[in-house]
Image (cartoon, rainbow, N blue to C red; front, side, top):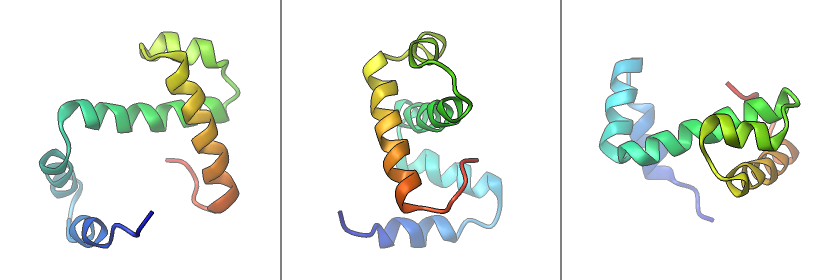
Length: 85
């Protein structure tokens, strides 16, 4: 996957949280925004040791979505020192 330089350059120009939200609303549909939010929530809850089925039920997503999130989290943790928000 190539580096999303144009995306990063665009988002870095936001000078406040409101501007960043506006930029994200410009780039993403409401559904995409919710999916990104869910991905972060899934990762945080997995990190806290919550069962995948409980996470899926409470967030209203498929267990496959949580399983994908678990795989993505594992890959992220092996290649990044960035902490989850």
